[in-house]
Length: 173
Image (cartoon, rainbow, N blue to C red; front, side, top):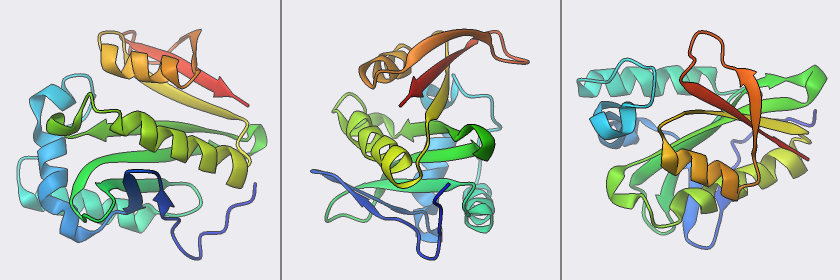
């Protein structure tokens, strides 16, 4: 796959800038990772302190490579993180990866995530030459399910290991 991470790719859409995560995003990361509404469908330990958020950011920054792209979603012209979107779990032999995303509650239902996801999918397909992108969502997360369907992901019959509440979707190019 063509992946060269000399500089982290900043992606631009009509309304958004997808940029590298930084330690300055700690307040918003804490909000995302401690919000009970956002986290009710995610199997992760919630952040409780700013130190938790900073530790998470540090882990992301240290692991950013050709195997992890983790973007902060911001409105163009503003630096405040309003959500995140990432590509991870790359399988080179299959030219496949997984996508994940989350958005602060006040910014949901405004078309922001579909705009960000379209740009990230375009980057994955055109630049990274990915042929299949997977997404997992909780069976009760209707917003995520609708987003994936709008992006032409297809529901798979595969069962997600260790969590029967998750549904696997795949986009193939």
